[in-house]
Length: 172
View 1 (cartoon, rainbow, N blue to C red):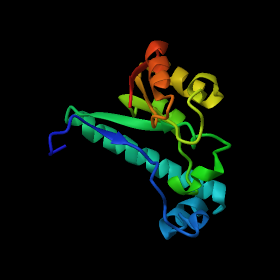
View 2: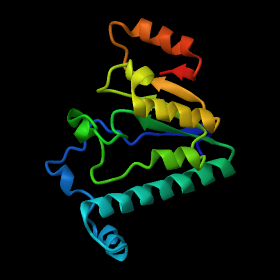
View 3: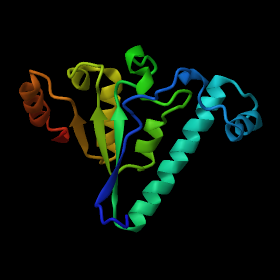
């Protein structure tokens, strides 16, 4: 904010978690205490606690940015924000954490969204149920969407297809 940026882009995807035991992540005492308060310190509850804490972080970030006239974009990771994420993308995301993207959209926590994919094919933005729901929710909430895709040899065709679609405001 103090640097004079016009907004902040939030992306949970990393180039790698660089840990040998990613599934053992998230068991610090404050998380376990909240999971026990909710009735059970199992993986599902721990993931919910961590997801709720992340959503609260987004709320606070959105509030602070909005107070200062700044915008917040959130990457909607088509690969990972689904019940059946590709195993080869596991090291790019924090483990044991629910990503409550529907809540983020419905609460208006984003001024803009970015549909991001890496493992899934480009066509997934047109024929995947999760991508379709992301697009529909953002449209219903008046949130502009940009497509983020590493350009492949057919990248020009992908760019043209996204641009011609009409539902997307940009291509990264």
